[in-house]
Length: 295
View 1: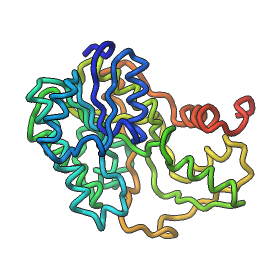
View 2 (view 1 turned 135 degrees about the horizontal axis):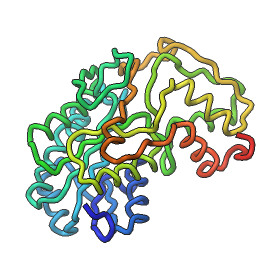
View 3 (view 1 turned 120 degrees about the vertical axis):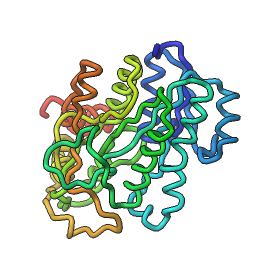
View 4 (view 1 turned 30 degrees about the horizontal axis):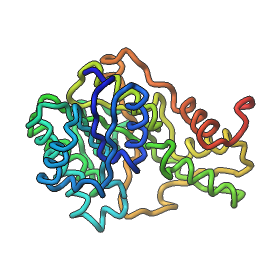
């Protein structure tokens, strides 16, 4: 589709990490983004969604809203399933009534994490946390609905400007601590929100549908990501590796959830930049930390 001059409704666009990045990318591309928050629309209420779509009349509907509190989801299962499993097919059905494309974001947490090579778009989900299961069920709901203009994008380990995230938290902790311990037995694909947003537009321009994986190139552990961020920031803080057992969590995380990006590259002709390059951009240009000349 043509992004320029289009009207794009972005659910989660006001306050979400990815939603804000999408809103900015769309604006730069010459479209008219319509960023919304949960205060503007109840996405599990079809009537509310229908009225909003009738009023705004968008050319494209993007769902960047979700329940993302991984551990809290174990106690708030009903809410997690409402937002992550029930809402996506409801939204897609409303998009189908208007014959406009629908974009939905999913997660690496739909996978079990027992592989040792990147997960492809053809691998079957095998989530075991409430969050992961709810997101996987949202995907299944969309596939069962079968609306042909649906694009499902799985992302992972999201960081970037506009909302507190793992990288920002680590650098904040380093301001008051000499040493941090971070788990080193979970491996994944860091995703820089502005890059995910830009690459989403590349897929839309090529009228991609179905399931795609989007992240930055490369893989690392949480310890590796934290240590790289601290080094870029020029902090004297020491980052020590520890096993996940040192930080028990209510929800179990995948030990390995690296995403295979080859389908995106084949469709777009673009290879996403390495996560280290994206991290350097974020730390130096957005967080204004460290010395770009020495990193």
